[in-house]
Image 1 (cartoon, rainbow, N blue to C red):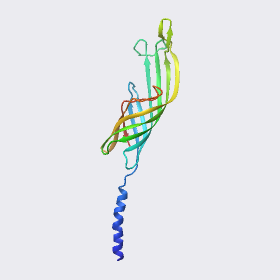
Image 2 (image 1 turned 30 degrees about the horizontal axis):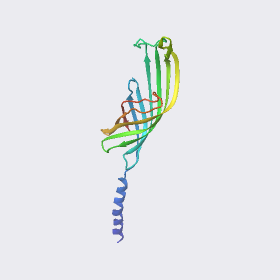
Image 3 (image 1 turned 135 degrees about the horizontal axis):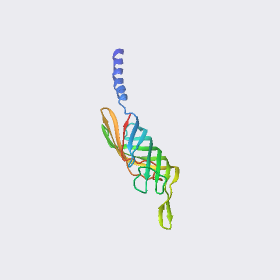
Image 4 (image 1 turned 180 degrees about the horizontal axis):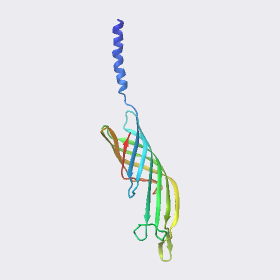
Length: 199
């Protein structure tokens, strides 16, 4: 009968339609974070995107990182004020990096521990005054401060561990960057702990 045939077709189509809605999908998230660098009063900022394909615990991240800080040293030991005298140094550093990394989660659910690793390319600059080391007849001494204006681009290896967790529907994360190899000691910040949010 035509009526029964239409009902049968509708009943067969319903599970297929519902099943299509439950299929896993690719997840794209924006991440924003900040961290306190070791020995630096100013924070490091991180912003980027993560894409996690369906049916996997591995996501791919593209991010940018920026930091700036100042170092000062005085031959007297106390650096309340900088002076253009022998033995005094004061340098302002800034660094901007582009990162590409993979993130591997160990479990799904509200709390997700993970590890990450990748590479970064950093532009770093340093400006200020520094007292060079001078070798004299009396031994090694610090010379008069000279103006420093240096910039370089260098690669860096990234790796570390982290934890994602949800609090009242908000996705948060904390991650620690571990010591890494770089072609320059100031080619990029190595924050001890980054805290952030995923959208």
